[in-house]
Length: 305
Length: 279
Image 1 (cartoon, each protein chain N blue to C red):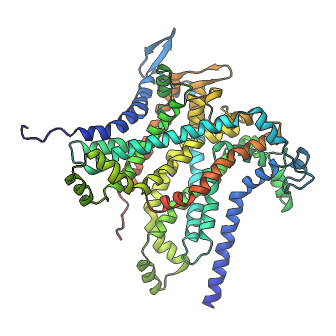
Image 2 (image 1 turned 180 degrees about the vertical axis):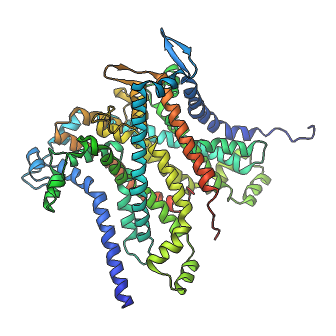
Image 3 (image 1 turned 90 degrees about the vertical axis):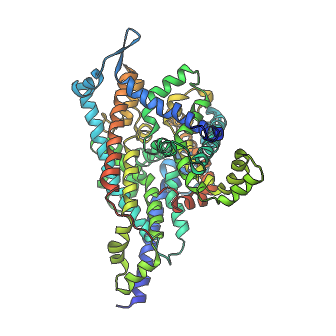
């Protein structure tokens, strides 16, 4: 201990600002929120009630039906992203990564544009386009003779959530496209040339050689999609408002938490129930991330080039 | 089968698919912008037609600029975005340097601790963040937003920047030490200039989500004088739902700054993503 070099203060100076801000504004509030879920307010003072809030959330029929509705909707939201957004993103990336394709950078930049727009713009723009008042969507369907397919999708309980999920897919398809594109570019030419010598080209090369090599990237995209979807809020709020209408059919965990925390119409805001829902969201995201880290990523073979 | 012909067909198919998707991606933006320049009647009668001398009208823009305080909102968004980026880059680079350069007890643990925030969204802690901002009197100030976005951006910034700082040559730093430079001088005048490309990548990654965020402005800074452009346009459009000219113009005005940023930074953004900075 005695011949230890003098304490290196500069390390502390370099680390302190980041660690302080991160701890004070992110980690501490996170745990404080988990803690607040164990309290409730009685006569304007905070009272410890243990797991009572969770009992209300899962046991009380009014609360639990809202919670399961939001959770189910959230899963549907996620499933649509996995089934539509990621395959389209992979397909676009596969086409774009073709070495002799012209205008590739133009296509890439153009397809990425929706991703940079805010949810407010995207939500309202689609709301207007799909609106029966303006008539762009019915007009265009009419032009191809499919007018009978038109319905005011955002206003129908049966379609609203799927429609909004597809709008979100439209917005974010650029992200899987870019990440997969990067993964495809990093596959060394020798591997593809060796395959070509063996007579594996085109689609066969994609399925047999490229796809297995980009599986780790697909895993990353899946977990990014999962986390983003289970903490989504903005698009639903911008398009349908905090009530996530019609009749809560587009309610997801983010909007449910916002309504509970802030209150709406006649119901008063309740920070403790809000924290309870936030804790449930935290648990769901944690389970997803752990499943990915221990179940998928550790089993995936990493190829070293 | 003729291979050359097959190849040409494939190329056509590839371009066809890409053009189709580009149309799908750009169509809504296109429709909103062209209709914002038309009078009310033409918006409904010919929604897909370009504005011509007869239908051209700026009435929507007049309403927006008269009613909404868009310059103020824009200014607020700029302050929040630039301020957050400044702190993310400065604090992030400092912490990344400490983790990449020095061997000390707890280095790995500290790295893991800072990396936790990459996967866990900061929104989960909103209830307690709001409570803290109310207690410290920061609610309805731009500082509340800058602090939150800085905390949110730091984990990924530290992660990416420390990867890059490990690649800076030790010889250079040791030469600096022999010349008697302090560790701070080595960081600020030798290392920082070398990792500028990585800093630009981090900045571009953070810029768009901060500019577009609706959740924290709505909860931490809803007051009129601190509204960001995203929240301001959301509220404005909500109030003017039936005034189509105003809504379309407000949307177009909200699209404009992001598109300008994108045009300036798209090469940096795309290079950042494709260089594998997020792997």
